[in-house]
Length: 125
Image (tube, rainbow, N blue to C red; front, side, top):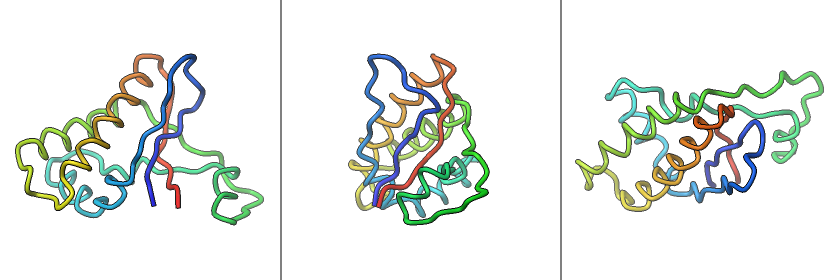
């Protein structure tokens, strides 16, 4: 499983792909850390369109449209988590892997914020 960022629209010339496997693996621990730090947990940014739900073999005919969030909101969470894990490297078993993912998330969310493009978190199984 992996967590990845889905942008509301493509940013020309920009590759928004991230690995997201480390963040997915550590999601429960990251949730606790986010709450401790007073920032929005990553999974609170999860949303899926009807089309994305089909990837899970789920068809919801009257599904509401996906929710997109401001890039700066996600940046606050990602930067807080990254800073915390840099100060507490042994907090997570796969801390280096998670940090690499968070840096990728930060890169994408910075670009999204710069271009005023909404985003949401998705799950890839």
